[in-house]
Amino acid sequence: MEHLWAPWRMEYIKKIKKEEGCILCQKPTEDSDETNYILYRGDKNFIIMNTYPYNSAHLMITPYRHIANLDELTDVERNEHFKLVSRSTRVLKQVFSPDGFNIGINLGRSAGAGIDKHVHTHIVPRWAGDTNFMSVIVEIKVISEALEETYQKLKDKF
Image (cartoon, rainbow, N blue to C red; front, top):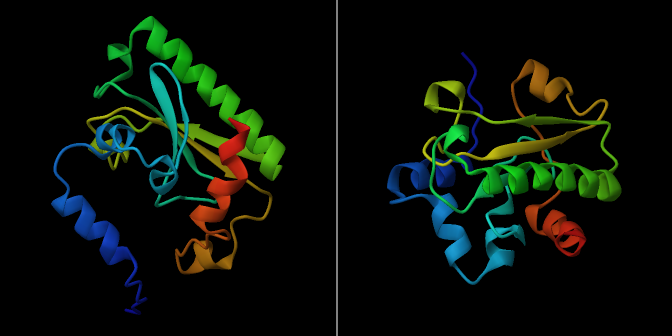
């Protein structure tokens, strides 16, 4: 068996084990949108960058209210939520010109939700050729841009 050392992952592992409460509830209460990578605040939902992204410019649309399932969203929350999904794809097309998107909601831990008690929609831009030998052969994903740089490109577009 070969081993790949990824010591940067330890920060993520420690956070998962130690964090009390819900990060998606906590971040919007803080007065530090840039540090928290919050790009936009709506009335019922906000747009935040994923700090452990699958691809560059991986965004999440999240209701402020701590709910685990889509059917718990009010009509007002749901309408704004999906308007922000559409708006995010428009902005990402304008800024990064992706070839497509993966848009999804993981409901429950067994469905892949890292934060399973607070529903959120992932928007992952995709480019032709963004999967290369690293992800196919050794299951390593290369993120080609720093979060801070991506944030600066997007923050004024919302």
